[in-house]
Length: 175
Image (cartoon, rainbow, N blue to C red):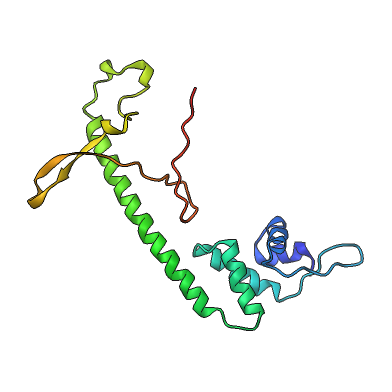
């Protein structure tokens, strides 16, 4: 089947199909005499697997490894379970980061509600968002829940960073 038909039947764009072929997720398709890709019917189940694997967070490289194991005639289940557990641990770590971010934002909102806009220095843009990391502090809890001291809020990786294991803080623009 030609690439347009495979795209229609799989629900993927032709550019995605070409990318998957180039990335090694789909085998190189034979070409017709006029140069069109001619995919076999078994490409559809493979594409369904690729989409499902991406949906659970596997990278292209991880999917390629899983497919490679299967193409060598071995069931990749043990390898997939290792990947699933690794990704699960990463999700749990990310959840903890997001919970910390939520706590930091709650503290920022609380402290920001006390900012008097009349005292806001125009060169600092807005005092609700402190540019000095030590300016945003939260009470640390000592034994029995007593406040021990003020502890600076730590920078939390950007929520927009979707790369596992590569947390990024969004770059700041200087005007």
